[in-house]
Length: 419
Image 1 (cartoon, rainbow, N blue to C red):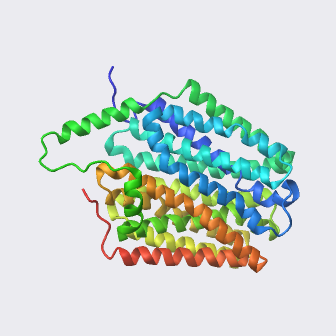
Image 2 (image 1 turned 60 degrees about the vertical axis):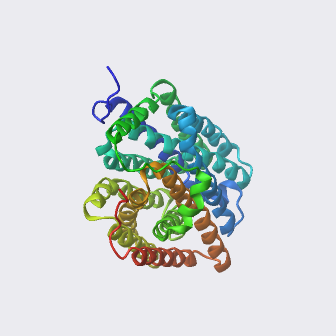
């Protein structure tokens, strides 16, 4: 039987790639609660070294942003499966680096490999599912992908917090990391198939549908040629790129300082992990709704109000003193992220010519994940200079509100597709 597109007819492979992105999320999720809280007591970080604590998020953002630029092109040359496997091979040393780390520098080294893993594996798991699906299923694919990945992030953060309390931080993270990485690599080796033939079938169908068209096709451009015009010259793309970068300030804040803040307020590691997990689960599940919703009601409102919800929610967490309020505020931030996150990518795709869309999206993902580095550095400096955690809450909240306002200003009308 020839190649056929559709989730149902390719359900076995589609499910394996959903499981792959769950494992990718779990690999980063294991660093979300334990490392920030126990950096001083278990990993040799000096007391009050907020900038050094932020360094592992800064490094992660730089590595992942750069790989986002090139992962797609690598997959066209090597194939999706090879790039996926390379990402999991890069992750194999991470549990050992954490287990034997004599200093925080080893955690930074592990974070470099974590950025390689995330940049290669998350992109490939998504691309492979898009290859397998029909064109009219792409919104659903993105929603399922983000739900699976961020469910992995949330559940891993909660589970590794429990493991750290029961067995110790190093031992718990080592056991969880080894099981996750080895299982994902084994499934990649013996279960996952190469999906580029499905991508080529999509391309052939597109060419056949376009045959005889009088409109001149837009020639593909090199990444170097597109990077600066796509980043700066188009004011609409510039607004979306800055919003993508700034929204990562919120996730960097949740990653770095929410667990530390909650524990400082008297919660234990598992309770802090539970509050962070609420945010991740709401964010992940919400995208199953907000992705398709943006196709119906438009992009602008979801982006602007999502940024506002995140900004207000982060500031509210810093002003509250009740676990019940923190839980509600985590839900608010998760809803805001669910509103803006898939919608920003869809808006960028709307504004890109089809022949250049993959490269334009790669440029957007570069700026988006660079937000981890920029945000982590700014948050670390703010906490270091102020000597506490109150300044980062106000910094993130204000940045999210200003960024959403900039999008509202640049898009007086609804964002429309160039097609």
